[in-house]
Image (cartoon, rainbow, N blue to C red; front, side, top):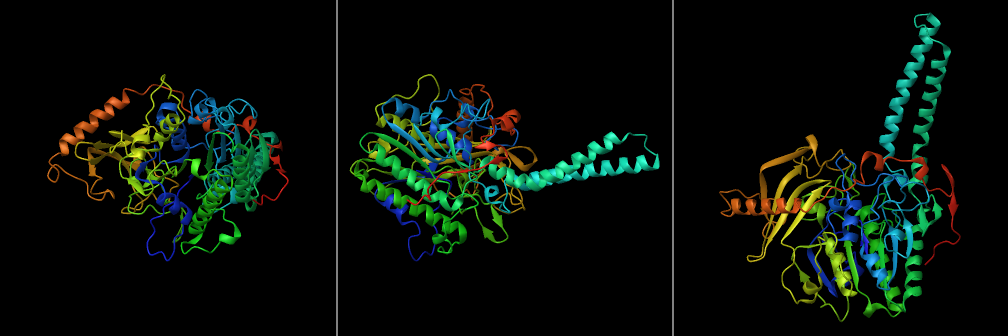
Length: 545
């Protein structure tokens, strides 16, 4: 099970705000240095499913767009990538994905579904092929709508000015022009004005909908039904498949803006709407655990809980924070190197197999899940490509004390921003930063005023020499080391630099899924239960679980 972000180390609590997630951790194994391969959802999820850095599959960007922007775009997880779901399906497992996908849908037509979960090893899919976003509820915190409205309004003003100038010139005989350009410029201006007015509704219909397998079931989404529908679908999948081996990936829409929360959880948390949404997600985890128990599956099911990246610090309006909190860790979502963007919860729970209450501080990665589950089902990882993850089985069971990772590389888009070295003989974990984002305003801990920090250009600082931190004693990355303060400074910088060079030699050119042509909205790829933009369908039932 995975969510977009949750931190359970809040201070001064009078009760457990996440009792069900806490129970998983207490009765299972907790990973305290669990690292995502990217600080944004699309590339992180690609790495999680394939066990490979997203740069290897082309799920990175050099043009600033670091996640898929539209459902009706042609980019997505390439069909030649192998997910752990595909391997488990070949081993006879029923495989399901319920919730968020955000790894693409179509390539050449609105129904080819080349990037669809069912083409990547899942037997069953129910959820959003795209992602929940502020624009789905027309929030002031907007991913696309506000920017598009501003651009359309600007173009309207330009064309309106052109039309008025031509009219004035025509009437005063100062501009020898026919009426046709005047009419066309005026009509274009009116069209742009209408587009700016309706663009919000168009986005809601284009991206905010639910599918079951290849069929749209609700377009646009009715948010009061979404959580009950997802829980209902989870229960149905478990009931259908309880007599055989199964893999179920529950990809929560929580806790992502617009923080859609059912009425009975609103105002319950001391931490505002974000806290309400976290508590609702924890309640959902509890309902799923209850279903496993009712179906007699609790003791035979391995449960994994994580997040795809850190909390979004820039999701803030006034003094209200809507994007979460990253505790002692610096930075957040979208920052490729700082811990706050990539250090995430990691819990493995398997009664009778994994020791309860075990805490592992070794560096581990979301990419490790791929080889871990493949080993557990008796499969083999692909031999025709580089797999960057390592099986966690020996570490989880206590057969090994050290992580198999000596180095982990931290990307921001296609740019390598940082790397960590797990020096196994000493136990130290060194972190080297080559590039960091410039926080705004100066002295802040994020890029406020922007949706997300940049990976390149004028908004970043290239460090020569690099920044060096010892995460073993400074997990907050607050005290950069120098040759004067750390005798091993030059040796560590040299060793990590050599590892980065060796890593880069393993990379091969691949088609870029976030190229301009792949991230643009294409009308002919737009899914619609009707004729776009007149899409409207709602599956029967109220979704009561």
